[in-house]
Length: 99
Image 1 (cartoon, helix red, strand yellow):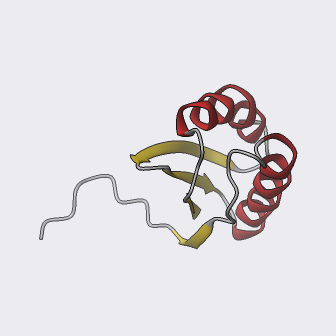
Image 2 (tube, rainbow, N blue to C red; image 1 turned 90 degrees about the horizontal axis):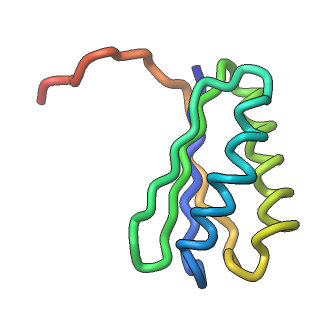
């Protein structure tokens, strides 16, 4: 599995972005090959993060391009800054890791 975390800062209306992403983008993402899961985190203070999990790096990279295109088309005025992207291979740990 491969995970991509996108952190968006400087949102002008996080509630509206959250709504549009949930209603419009997430369903489209779920139809993409290799899709495993998608989560949205409202971190407050105009910050949102999304977490996408796909089977392969290629599929995850494709989702990043799709997200960038969709944000540019649908949310440009609400999300003025490019996201910080963290991506990498994901382990399938099923239980919490003890510290």
